[in-house]
Length: 254
Image (tube, rainbow, N blue to C red; front, top):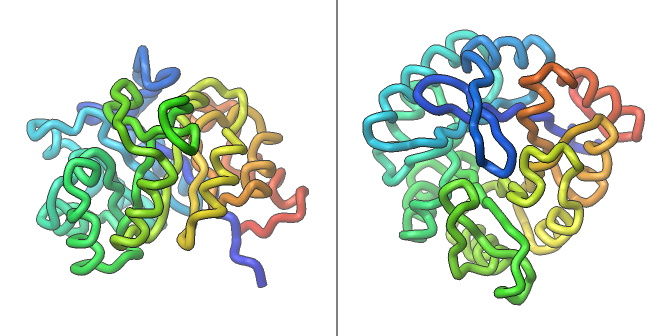
């Protein structure tokens, strides 16, 4: 039997509030994270992802509080990313109710962090968050970015994903910075090439605007689809997306 496709709402959290913009710019308030998380849980979300988009030391306590409050309200896996720099951060987030953690900038700065987390907690806990842009500077045509896409690294996105999997990453969250917030559809080429190299599940992120955008992302190789704006605005519900996926012949959890 085929594994069910996961539908994952993403909550970008800053200072205890959900925010959203286009291409990670012009962030605006989108609501209370605990209230939104509960709404998505009731709609049938398979998982929830929290990304602390400010992630400074001063803001971390806010994130722990939000994760703890959410874990008390919803009973599906929670992935938390942003500002995770050590195994101690993972331990504290797990104690607050997180099931998985997403790493990005800190892993780029020190790749050994990936193996440290995987060795202690298991690969299933570790999600590599990839903010990817198209670029003519790399062999694959895609470059890894940090700081919400504003800073380009020298890392080829495919080469970095392969290295991270070898180090112990258990899942890839592949976010297209070019598509993020545009509601013009997922970057299917990016999903396809990530699927071809990856031995672990791939989550497609960035660009969802219509229910019709979701089945092609799964057909391109994603194991899960993640979206934010279309759910926060109420344009789409989790149920809308699952019905569209099911109509396309894909297995979903009802």
